[in-house]
Image (cartoon, rainbow, N blue to C red):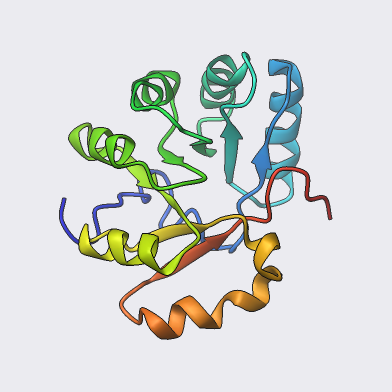
Length: 172
């Protein structure tokens, strides 16, 4: 599991092929199913369902059951116990807004693909030391948006990918 420990290729060749990861936070399972259906009809087969509501685990389970072709990420994982909850619900990978060693360790222990969040050079170096090559740069909106991309990429050339996330209330 060292190096490229992410196995985000369980259902498709690369769920991030379209370079877009919609993050969904909804209170109702039915609404999440509707969003998943629209995403699939639009050609997107990947989504992040965030652990910000009581409905998250049920929503992940419902989408996994109703739309097995969807690659589902569980987002806003802040506690190691959420790794098991996400996996049991049917998530294929997880994401976090920050870099929590306990969560990273639990994900590795359970062979669960996990994308920790980073914001500082120190956090990026910490991830590099742990051979994590897919990171969520969060909240990129505080750093001036997507234009920040060249800085971490130049300073850490061994990284394969940064996922940029603007933060909680960003709408396009």
